[in-house]
Length: 207
Length: 97
Image 1 (cartoon, chains in turn orange, purple):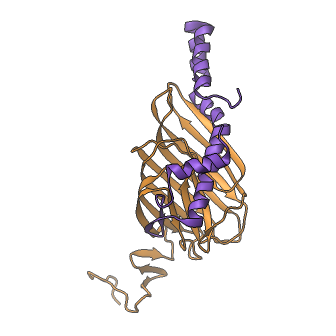
Image 2 (cartoon, helix red, strand yellow):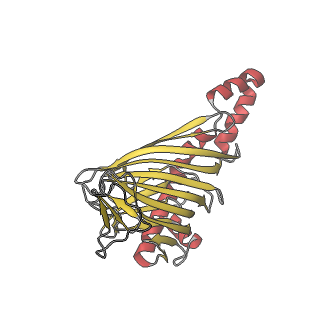
Image 3 (cartoon, chains in turn green, yellow):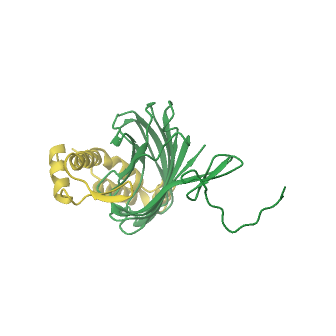
């Protein structure tokens, strides 16, 4: 029995099944099973879009999901970046989302804005939008498919112009719960105002 | 102060039907019909909320910190401090004030 195999390429034999190695399955560039960490589910680029609407990304394969965005905002304004869950291609607009977030910033000296909500129809990341300036966020979505509440943990960083203090930057750290045990399969991420975003997103699954 | 219906009308002027782009499942689409109207409702509600409640958030954000205000009072006196505070209030008026 060989203790080492050296080849240049291993391809799946049975079309559609991938390659299995000691419990881990490699399929179309993605690794699932075993002790896998983050697994890329989908990715894409948006250009001047007011929302990212993704269906059929949450499945029974993973319990939790990480969504990242790296890009810029295209219009200025103080508006939230909001999240709604999708089920069967439709947004869930039930007013059962809690949210608490803190936004540290520095204007002259320093400060922090705190916002909370108990019955919003969305989860929110407090954002500021400044035309043509960097805009990035990471959003963890816990248990969207399980018969348990869907939970959110996020961080967002953006630039803004406060008027009296001029241009500045702010980061928002927030968490919240959607008190509903519906099995969600998608997500709708959108600007609270009519701002748009340009950049790239990635969706990872993990257990 | 504008009503919700007035905000909806303004949103439709700012972003007419056929101009709102959504990245849906890897493809850019311009929402129309019910999807567009639902989007208008959301944006208008957000604008109304900002109009009614945004002044407080903006004031909190724009006031100097307590440390800076104390420093301002120590160096420049209460009258100068009041000028600074009044500007923030005037820039972010409370509805009905």
